[in-house]
Image (tube, rainbow, N blue to C red):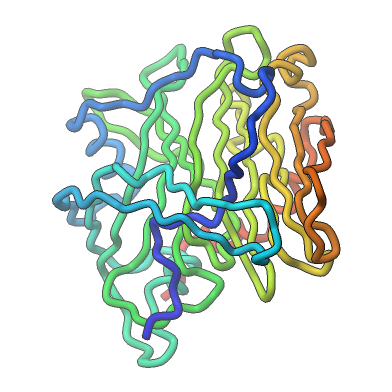
Length: 306
């Protein structure tokens, strides 16, 4: 029996509670690339020299989960940004530490060569050539028992180049891989009010007695590819036995010109006890907040020595 969650079923928590108008304010977003030829060119840049094939679309059913105590008035539902996206197989040997982990069956020690990949490509402004940012999630097929550190792999990738000469990867960033099972949302959105789109990804993680997810916000104008903020978007359990979620407050973040990033946080369960009504707080965090928390995982992207 597999120890994996479904790779396309995120633990990020969305509650049936009306959001404030400021959070739901209409805003322009960059849509992902739909040109299949271009998408495949970008995917080949991420997995160079590997065999790529498109899989038939298999719709995913969203299952309501009620993981809170029966006395709780709150219900949560898992969301999956890639639920309706096409999957691809990518065949090739593991190329780095996180792939070495994800491709090995911890019981049989057998290794898989076949990744099941879903991804989205977004255009990024560039003065020379073409530039894209990619959000991808994948697992290795045929593995029954995978280490908790690498159930699936979620990452963001910066790709640049020219249509005539091809594309190459300029940077990769690995989302927290521990008990990773899904990416709840992917948005390219103007957060500074000046028309500069930021990449905002909500990616899940877990551990002993705790499940949660984190926001990763990228300013794509920066030369270094990495988030400018990492913050909790949900948490369930843990030492404080809590249930809480956070959503990006777009309006307030724009007022601060994205020098700080603002959120609406809702705490529903505290110390194991459901609150009569959610406690609302509205914190703002400066650029750079939480970024060092993701530094350690990036070592897993170093090329494999095997």
